[in-house]
Image (cartoon, rainbow, N blue to C red; front, side, top):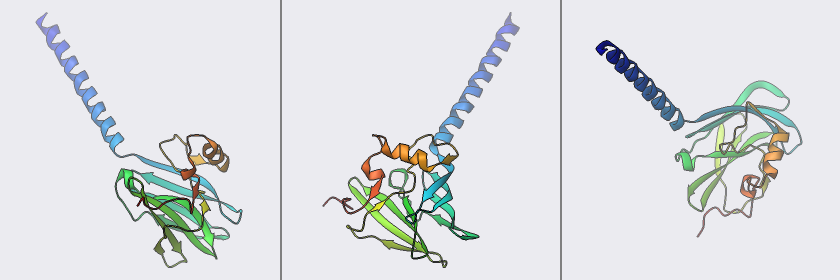
Length: 183
């Protein structure tokens, strides 16, 4: 009888240890969220390109080819890491006068946002902080916002999400009505 109790204690200890390891792994996975997906993006010209996206709690990146230029891919990485609540989010990818551009937004504090435009004419990315008021743009990049999106985000899926009540105007349009910071 004593032997059974020892075996039972050993099995209980193993189960407890396994549960603790699984719990620790779940906590560690929850602390560092990283998503990878492909996304269809409609440029202002009407052309549609496929981009590869990555987003984590501390950074974002986009990899794409310009239309008609299948050579070397263009890769953009976020430069501003203000932590999970203040991460730089790309919201527009386009081509302006033959130059790849990405517009981003960073929440700097409650009610305050910093808008940035990056341009890449082939010699690397050049950063330009936008003024408080600038020409409006429809956002064409998907804002992850914790949704289960799958491996590919299509134009149709983005249209459905953007028409949903929970997808606010601030996730669909970047423009003059946006205040950079409450004064």
